[in-house]
Amino acid sequence: MALIKTENLSFRYPQCGESVLNNINIEIESGELVLLMGKTGSGKSTLLRLLKSELAPAGERFGTIENNASKTSLVIQNPELSFVAHKVRGELAFALENRRLSSDEIALKIGEISAYFNITELLDSNVSELSGGEKAIVSVAAAMIDNADVLIMDEPLSQLDPKATNELISLIKRLNQELGITVIIACHSCEELVDISDRMIVLDNGSVIQNCSPLEAVKNDKLLDFFPTYTSLFDERPLSVKSAIPLSASLLEKECTPQSKNEIILQAKKISFAYNKKQSDILNKLDFSVTKGSIHSIIGANGSGKSTLLKALAGIKKCYSGKVRTYGKIAYMPQDVRYLFTQDTVGEHISRDTALKFSLDKLLAQHPYDLSGGQMQMLALAMLSEQSYDILLLDEPAKGLDFCAKNELKEYLEDITAQGKTVVIVSHDMDFVSEISDTVSFLSDGIITITGDRRIVLSTLNFYTSTIRRITSRHLKTAVSKGDLL
Image 1 (cartoon, one colour):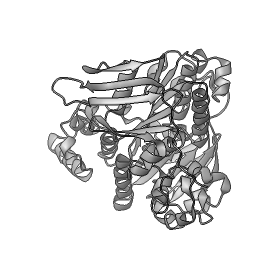
Image 2: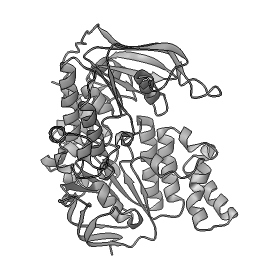
Image 3: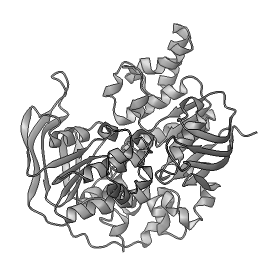
Image 4: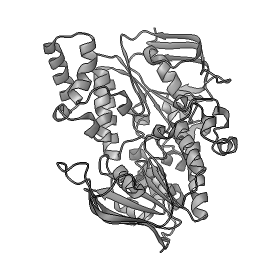
């Protein structure tokens, strides 16, 4: 008997004419690691929430869901939104206290899970002060502390740097293989997960179009965009960096010709910032500049200060020393775009023409909070597009976007820079950075440690670099994206 089974499952949100899910028929066996994939708005997040009945969205549901698990836990795309306590210890204890376990039982469970998840040193830390990677691991620990046998995760890697990504992948693998936990993960790209997954379920417009092993799915040319960037480069269709490296010896690269733009439009000189006098500086006498008409990406570890730097450039955070000079009007998109939504429907935020331009025209009657993560990102960008600005600051703009939406974002940014506007991006998506950027800066220990042409910077770095660079570094000098290959 399947652990989870749906029969003819369909779902429609209130005030939405079309169904988000259409006749979903799937079976998930105990102990499987399943990837749920699909384009932005294909219904992945809705399906996940329906599998966790307590968090099912409001709307009309048809068909049946059978969940035979003793306990199912869901980790949402932004773990910060699920935290209920100030301290990590309190977050872990919350579910146990609701079950009225004794103090000794709670202490035992917290001690065990914090040791297994290697977060013992974080127990008395404020949740708000954790890095993105630490928040992700704490959210999984809180989900698993009450003996869940099914773990559902919605885009768990979308906001993590390479180091944090590897740590979370390792943890997911241990939970699945050592403890037999059934894991269901919604994602747009399976690069880090495909070689450890048992099955891929692919949704398109709310319907299942593929349900098989990754080895079978990769044979379908129409699904190649869901696989790692390098998979489509070779007839052998490798599913891991390890298997792609030997094949990359046959690849050739274009000549690296850095662009030279000289007009500075945004500049920071010796800026320093700390959230309070007791904390060390997040930005420490940092120098930074961007040239007009370029796309500049800022990369670095979770908690390195990238978002803080972007807020300082936008004038949202005031540095206690140094100066920020801007030569134009700034528009800013925060990492959590929901702060921008003040109305009840998409149509109240943007015009119909703008909605059509950003593929949101069918969502005008929906509440922004009912959109998928990727659709929220596009709505925020659409709202900013209606403003007048010279400099666009974007914090994790590719978060939650599928390959089609990323291409639309790329085309939009290239279009506005061709018009003379300037874009500064903070991102952990190294492949997106490698494709979109003119220049890149690496932020570490409060300062910019390297800045320059994207190919030079990303080929200098060994860990914070693109997938293409990881498979070609032994054979090619500076290729970091598909566009750099001959």
